[in-house]
Image (cartoon, rainbow, N blue to C red; front, side, top):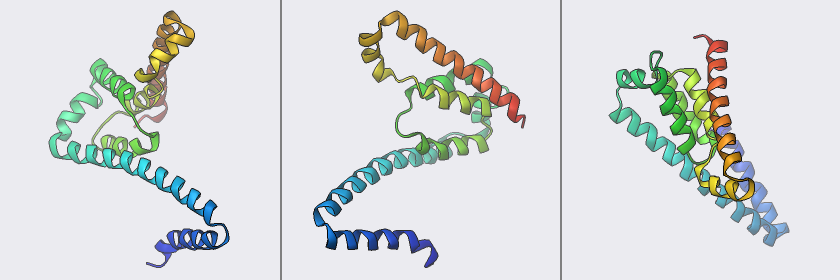
Amino acid sequence: MLRSLTFPLAVAVIYGVTFIVAPAGAMQALKASTFILVRVGIALSLVFFLIFALNLFVKPAHLVRLLGKGSGPKGILISTVAGILSVGPIYAWHPLLQELKSKGMRVSLIAIFLNCRAVKPALLPVMISYFGSIYVLIFTFTMILASWICGLAVEMAVRE
């Protein structure tokens, strides 16, 4: 029990000492830490809610049909679109992807999902204003194609 509390206790002691020595700096650090904790907490809450909903509504047989070994182009398309539309920090998605993998999701589709996160629809207008629509179209298509190639390479390398 005490071992699991070592880190939080050490952080509390460091904050306490810092509040005594430099209260303004400690308050600024505490605000920054709280901001990060809230952002991570929101992202993790969303992912855990998705895991809960996945376990509640999606049956493993259905998931295997959509994202499993025989999913084919439909699985690639689902993984690509999900990766492009996903938001939040990448580490927040790891628990959900692990859950999906345990239910039969192909590793190639996980790689495609992770790579397609680089394509962000919200940034496309900014990119178009800087680089032009032809460049952005070619760049986006290349990113998606590269994610498919990476997924294939991962599947060949892992061979489960």
